[in-house]
Structures are given as C-alpha cells and as structure tokens.
Length: 298
Ligand code: GLN
Image 1 (cartoon, protein in one colour):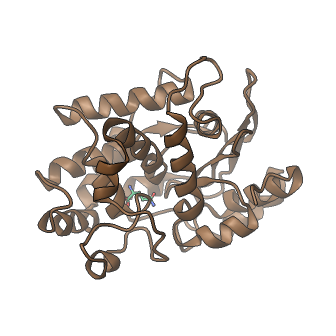
Image 2: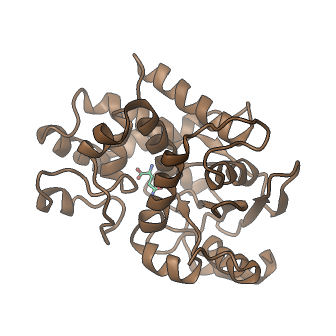
C-alpha cells in the first residue's frame, strides 16, 4: 500500500519551526499494524526513529487522569475542539475563564503536562517514559536530547501560551521548568512498531497484549480515544473523521497513532506535512487502510 501514497509526500513539507526536525527525509513513509499477535505487519520506513511530538499529548492526558482524576484535570482544560491551528493563542483570551479548550492543542497540553506528578522534571519524565515503555512493550524507549534542546531553544510561542495561562491561574510555577519537561515529553522517540503497539493498548481499553492487566483504566482509555476523534488531527479532525473514521493522533514529526476500538493499533511515519501539520501521506495511507478493511467506527 505504501507505493500508492508515496507520491503524496511531494506535496508536503517537513516541519521547520523546530530546527532539529528539518533533518527528516520528506520522502519517507512507513507503517506498522499490530493486531495483538507477536509480530507487526510493517512496510516502508517502519524502523526509523522519530519523536512523538503532539502524539505525547494523548499519553500525558492518560497519565494526568490516572494521577488526579477527571475533576482536577478538567478544571484546567476543556473538552471542545477549537477549529484553530494547534499552537493558536486566540481562544485562550476569548474563552472565559481562559481555560484552554482541549488537551490536544498546545495550550491544553501544557496545562495537562503541568499536572503530571513527580518531585522534579527528572522524576516526571521518568514516569512518563516508563508509561510509554509499558504501553509499547519496548523497554529501550527514551527521549532525543537534540530534538528536545532544539525545541526548548525556539519554543517562544509555547512559552507565551504558558505565561498567558500562568497569569490566569491555569498553571503555576516556573514557565521554563514546564517547557523543559514539555519539550522532553515531545522528544520521546519511537518507531512505527512502538506506535502501533501503543495504539493497540489504547484500542483495547489500556490492556497490553503481553500482560493480563490493564495499563490504563477502561474509562480513561475511552475518554482519551474520544479526544482523538474530536481533536486528534487538530483542525482537520472533522474531515479526518469522515474520510478515515479511526481515533488517531498526529505529531509534527510526521507520526500518527491510530487505535481501532477493540481492533488493531496503527503506527505511521511520514514527515512531509500538510499545512495543518499532519503527515500528508500518512493520512492518505490511513484512508486507504480504513476503506480496505472497513475500519471506520461510524
Ligand atoms: N512539540 C510541538 C509543539 O509544541 C508539538 C506540536 C505538534 O506536534 N503539533 O509545537
């Protein structure tokens, strides 16, 4: 199937606002599908490492909900899609009381990240990485220091979102301490197979195939997947729901995780992005996979 979407990479562009991401090869496209059996079905650049970027927002949301429960988390972040770009500041001011609209946009993710329990950034990151390792079954997962540093040095838009929210009491503490953790969270490195297994765990209410206990409580996995449907592809989530119909989350590194409820997990990588920041070939490939195997949840 990769061959059918390769041409789409040409009409996209690798993210450049995080300088380290510019090193990616825009022609790359890879996919892995995990159905709970030992091996993944994989094609293309499925072993190339890439950083989670916004895909991490799904995982921090699950962890924050496990840490604090719904009442605390949703006192800091809303549940509505925005229709704005993922890094927009506009709705923060217009939406009283300045609470970010959802956890999948940057402002909302920063608010959620500020809730992760731990006495230091090191401890928080350690907990998050451990969580990702458990969900993927890959104990080698860590974060890419160069990408984290590159984003930290250039994250002034995210800093401004955080300062705005600090002023309005959504977050507290040092903004740069939060940015340090957030940029490391975004720089956690995976490949398509790791992502497919994470998708599978989400698809099966947090149950990992190799373990007979659930890593994420049923209710939290349900909630997270719902956000993936309504806000997972940023301001392209509506069209994506129509064309693909699979709970999914993208990141500007070109990754997309898909979780078919009760079914397969899908991990995609294609760093050439469309103007909304989604992998252009990755989305097309998901559309083909969904149509061929009748995977739309609608
Ligand atoms: N780290 C990125 C940022 O905050 C994540 C955004 C994304 O993947 N859309 O800008």
